[in-house]
Image (tube, rainbow, N blue to C red; front, top):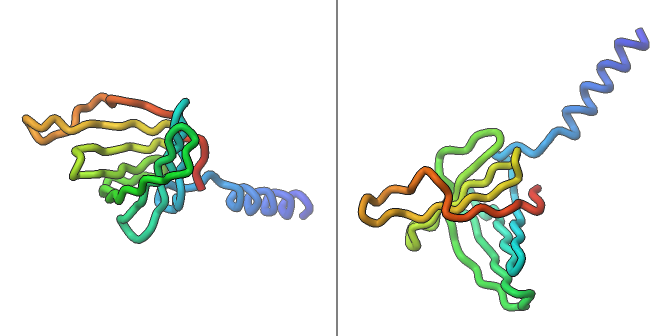
Length: 121
């Protein structure tokens, strides 16, 4: 009986400390040498990026849309006006930026830039 209770408690504990699912992410922080970008989930598909560069106090805010390719471990945001999309992979803790090829109106399969995700919740 003790083994059964211990196994049940262990299972419940594992579920409560499980990794954040990409469907439930509310904030992602990406840091590079010179900048910090914080992506905040505002409403449904709407996200906001707050950009701090060189430790400045001024924050640039940009609105992004979440694309439909959300999985348990990744999601993608798009800034259509600038022809840019960012894919966040929570497993590898990488943020990959893709720049649209305006001749074809498609994104290349390889990222133009990759940064580390400092934290997410």
